[in-house]
Length: 431
Ligand code: IMP
Image (cartoon, rainbow, N blue to C red; front, top):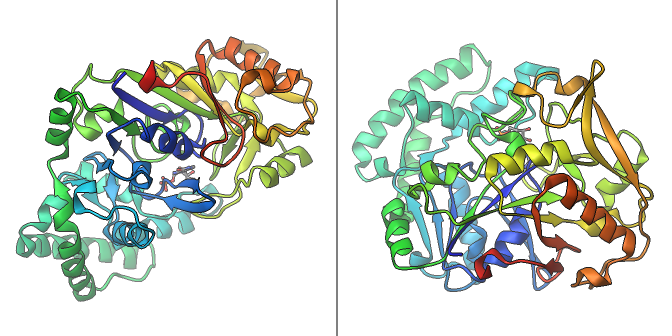
């Protein structure tokens, strides 16, 4: 298969970065199509740890083209910092290796200030956003007051629009959010510098992808966040502000419908979430704390401790169906070593009613009781295991049960943080 999308099927942080990095070896082009630097992919390559927020994980493979599509919102300050960091480590050495859509919208400092100001005002009702201005930037896009990278071409008219925006945003920041306004002259000067750095990367990315597809190139779409953070199908309002499903690759990268060959859903062997909102299988006992520590479950974007829960098959079915998943990659199985028994949520119960599927509109998710099955755990380390046959029998049974409950082919199993710590059962680019 030639075009593959990798998407999260939980609340983000499923370990997509590692899978994308692995599949990028077989791809010519790697594409981001939604979200912004609220995403963060942690990758361990040759013992070195990299955190990528905006640049697709293909950047760590020489010779690949990385594309940031029109559906993303990009903080120009964060992007330039990330490019510099990658270059300092010997990656992204040519300007050709990164293409940024003219049509992508910018996240401006006032978006960040509004995001943070609103969250502070909401207090205990806060969404728990990353504070990177993602929601306010998407709001402006839809309100038709956003600034696109294309607008940088004519800097005079860009400045005029920026000043107009700032008048409104600063009034809102001061009078409603009681926050510090953004200095217009300072931001214009900063944008002038950033413009010079970013213009060489701007490209008609949709056109580029179309031609590449026609020429038979292999394209990997790198989803950010996860299905339960999807603006439509997630746990609204505790979601991010973009569509996080594979279908977003069509609008968010300009890929024509029908051109996506396979979707690989990524899920952890357990569940995590950062920020507020319902979490049916959340573990409130010491087991949660242990998994957080063993799995290093602290947000890569914000450092916040992640909430921990059991694997949720109801949620997985919802996410895999919406994504039309061809396969599932299950990451971090090694983290469950020593947990005995392990649990899997097979259905929900609320007010005496059993739910095999997500309740419509995800209503009442904060009040449901997860119906869990207990399976025997395992105690042997999974370090170095590269084949199913070498897994302890209870670990194999755990995977088998997840396969039965989700009815999707198990394509990969993660057994550690390193690039090579994986049991590869089915590589979509080789299928
Ligand atoms: P925002 O995307 O910063 O607006 O945050 C909205 C919600 O999505 C919050 O609960 C964040 O913690 C969550 N979120 C956004 N991006 C990610 C991610 O990449 N991983 C995990 N949670 C995320």
